[in-house]
Image (cartoon, rainbow, N blue to C red):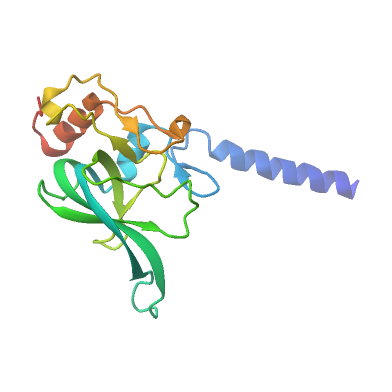
Length: 190
C-alpha cells in the first residue's frame, strides 16, 4: 500500500507541475540550444535584429568569464559584419559588429558565413558588447540577393535559413521585418 501511495503522489506532483505550464510562453529547450518556435518568441528574446553584410571571420582566444571571476580563455570564431538595416535594438546602420560563435559548438551548429553574404541576424548581447546568435537554426537568414533594401521587396517574400537544417528554421518574411521596424521605431519602411 505504501508503494502505491508513493507512486500516486509522484504522479500527482508531475501532473500538477505540467498543469502549471499550460499557457506558458517560455521557450522549449533542446539538448544544445533554446528553440523559440515562432517569430514572436524569437523577437521577444533578441536584443538586436539586423540586416548585415559579412566582412570576414577570425579565430580568437576570448575571455569567457565576467569580472570578478578570474579570466578563462577559450577559442571562438569571431564574425565581422557591417550593419545595413536595423529592425530592433540600439545598433545603427553602418556599425561594424562582431558576432561570436564557440569553437566547441558541434560542427553542424557553427555557421560559416561567406564574405559579402547579405543576412538577417537575430542577436543577443550577454555583457552589453558581446553579440551572439540566439541559436544557429532560427537566428540567421539570407536576404534576397537581388534586392538593395527591404523597401524594394514585397512583404510576402520569405527569407531562407542559413543553416542546413531548414526543418528547424522559422518562416520569416519581409513583412515581419517591416512590422518590427514600425513597432520599434515608429516609422514605415515602405
